Every structure is written in structure tokens, then in C-alpha cells.
Length: 155
Image (cartoon, rainbow, N blue to C red; front, side, top):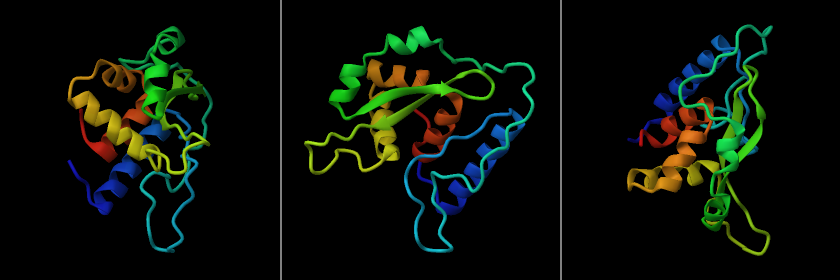
């Protein structure tokens, strides 16, 4: 499913609202925003959700413990130039697990130019039934899954 830039902007605004309501701080990609003043970068929120005082932890269905992430076949993912990265925890205590491109210094041109391109590859392979890719999407944190679904559609 392809989204227009306006639909993508609306979806990202909804993700930001969800994150604010659930007391989650969004993490942005390390991509630089576009230089055109009126353009909207589809992967960097307009603002970050402000952290609020912590209340009850919210773990949605599908959140996995760190042991499940450690059991993931990182070598197979890295061979395809992407990996599942665990970088701390969201403000609700759930693991912040993202799917990111892997850039090797010995390759002049990376296979994936950015993380969303790696997402598209993972989603395509998951749709084709690959256990590795289905597992990666299942282990990604809910905010990452929302961003992937906005960018690539459902799997």
C-alpha cells in the first residue's frame, strides 16, 4: 500500500499523539531533514513527545523480553545488511528495538540507502513467508512497527 505525502504526514501525527498519550518518547532516525523549507520528512516527527511522570507500565501484546531479542539470528540479518538493534528502553519500560540498515566501510554503496529501505526489504521478505523477517518485525517495538506499517503497509 502506497501513501501520499499528506497521508503519511497525518499518520505520523497520529503516531506522535499515540506516543504522547502512552507517555513514550519517540526516537528519530539519524537522517538529516530535507533542505526545502516546506517539505515534510516522512521519518522525523515534527516534535518529540514530552516525557510525563511515569505511571503504570504499558506493555502491549507482542513486546518481547531481552532474551528473545538476544536469541535472534543477528548474523543472518547482518548478511543482508540490516539488523535488529536494542537501544535501551522506552519511557514505559518496554524495550526500544528497531530495524536498521547496516553500512559496511568496505562497501562504496550501501545496499540500503536508509532505514526505511531496510524496512521495505524486511516487510517484503516477511510477506514472502521468511521466518527471520517475520521474527524481526515481531520483536521490533510498537513505535517502530507503527512507523514501518505507515511506510510499507501491513505484512
